[in-house]
Length: 406
Image (cartoon, rainbow, N blue to C red; front, side, top):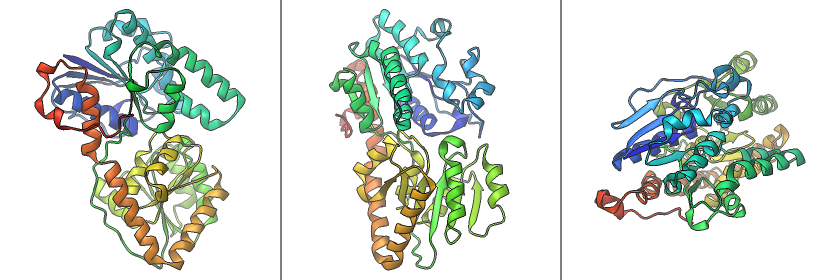
């Protein structure tokens, strides 16, 4: 049996979608599939991985002949051109993808439409799983304009509606995604709500401090992650410590502006243990993205008990708030609103450090339960195992319970 994981950026990108694609590939391999991951290209490279696991083939920049997969277009579009791959080259790539038994598309882009329609024509609709690790409809919804709303409806009609009665399976990352597919007429029984995030749950190492207040920012230092908003917040709060973990095109700008400030530390990429230690010493996680399907960095902060301040335009954070109500504070996406929320948390800690620490412990406990790797892996395994004839199923997969099913 052969499975194709299609649509993520190159794995060197190492964002949430890429981690989830690799996690899905490893689970498919454990279930007996020969897996091929087709990397779509990357906005910028990070650490090149080589050991993806037994039975997994990684095809880097698999669609390089498509102009939307080239590095220059990726950079100019801030990675959004990934969704346009296959718009005019689908037939060419079909010859490479037609002979697999299962297709796991990481998000609904043009490549999904092109290859998916050919799979429907071949009678292989049962082999299609559409995940939603980043979606155009969430991005456009967050912009809250007539033009964006109209464009989203046009893309829904072009990309998704042709599959609404076809019997394909949908993996939703959050409640907004699930509701979106139901509104489009997809069979609710085939929509699986699995908030997938490939993160090892570390033991929380709380650092109790009364005198200092620290804010963490974890993620790629790019425009779409809200680095300009972050800069404005730092300028407005010289009394607060800022720990910035991550790298990207805007890191030099941050270094030139804040490199000499004692209250700002810009770490770049760090090892997992060091990252967890830095987070444990902070009080608040700052997420300035306009849109997140399910923010890996936020979940990592929640594991360490950090209260997250995020934009109300992010459907992923709205969903996280339903799981951990006290752990997510939603606000308008402007520096002044973020600063106001951070000051409220500062005052809360100042008035009762014990109460604030109890809140952090509750956030950590609840999030570790909600995003247990055992739960997530079992849910994804069940999602895939339903595609395999019973006689070849490993017996242990029947012991899992699908926790996130609709």
